Amino acid sequence: MPANKKPKPTAKIWLETEGQPILGKGGANILQTIKQQKNLKKTAQTLGMSYKYVWTYLKKMEKTLQQPIVNTQKGGKKGGGKTTLTPLGENLLKEFKRAENYVGEILEDEQYWMAIGLKISARNQIRGTVKNVEKGNVTASIKIEIQTPTTITAIISREAVEELNITTGDKVTAVIKATEVMIAKEK
Image (tube, rainbow, N blue to C red; front, side, top):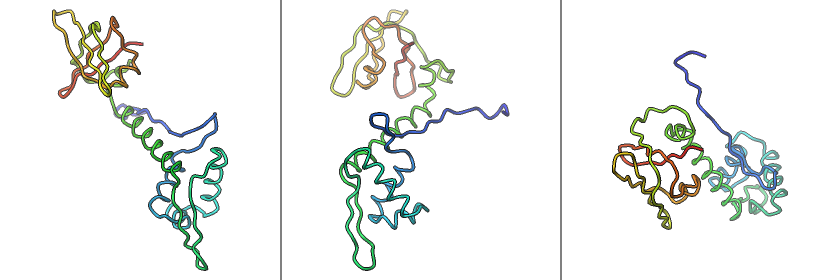
């Protein structure tokens, strides 16, 4: 590998239930296109797939979930029926996009990779001990005592506090960006 080409982490996202795959990138594209086109034939054409493939994919999902993903209406003699996502179909698409965006942000976030032990460019890192954790509905306030007689307060999401399992007395690192103070905890 050339020295100027650094490997980048990547990931493939799919949703599953009870170990059975339901929806991956291709399926999400099918659902998104159905949402836009409101027609199964046009969806297949837009995606360069056969109508049968798209129909079979949807039926496989529905069989796994035991619930409909799409609502279809026949279009008469010339076809052209209307196809829409059910609330479950909408929710699956939304969940897939949410997971894909979340993982995409993590893969691009060098500070996240620093938090799991990889080198990043951020140099404003201060180690300290958590003295107080106050959880609100959405955010949490973490008070960190550092060697110099000072305490840093970071406002981070409640979800981050819970995912990192931050509690009073933990040893953490404050990673200071120009716009925020982030918290990292060694595993």
